[in-house]
Length: 136
Length: 182
Figure 1 (tube, rainbow over the protein chains, first blue to last red):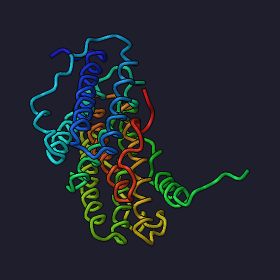
Figure 2: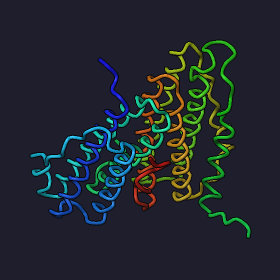
Figure 3: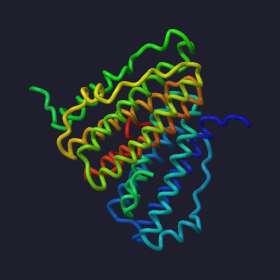
């Protein structure tokens, strides 16, 4: 299989970050997350989106984010949303862990990795919010 | 004006720096085995750091109780799997991992941890250093497989860092970019 370009890899990461933005926006609207936690997570995800968009500078064509039926179901209460968000953050971290090492421009790897590290902290905050073990 | 040093910096920062300085991070690659540039020296540094962290967590456990103890125990178990993974990676490159130090040797480089707060501050500093080391490794390792391994471990260290912050009553995330920004 052909290796993906740096742009393709970052477009994928941007789509995932946008999905997280949509999720936290929806959860805040529906009171499915503690407001201060949700606002902090949302602010971080927006910063990630802005940074990726700046880096891509119009290159690539991210797919529009469509609210998933899963998200609609998850925002019914705080526990189910936290479980949904944990899964989403986990998948995003896995995408960074697999994608960042493949980025050809070494100058981009560390800052992209720092977004992955922030995702790890989000996982912990979400686990803490529903009283499950902080470390998997 | 004299530089202001917080208690946290005095305890954790200096101690963790000491651990790093004394754990053999700057050791040259072995005289035989893989060629320079294979990533072997960096693997050796990461292994030394992991071993020092594993020993440090053992010291932290002596003063921790309850939930903090349970969580730090889980973190320490993951550090052990990182050590095994790094040793395998060194083997895969045809080298022999350097022998680790005994716990008494490590202990001499650690600060006196009298309270749970001391232990968790020390743990946070260790995790910050590990995260930084693995992010640098993701940049610096020449081979994709080694970069993938470093990124995988880095994602674990990210949750460890968040966990030891939460155990101190701090927000898990310090900001949107933990080190460096795009």
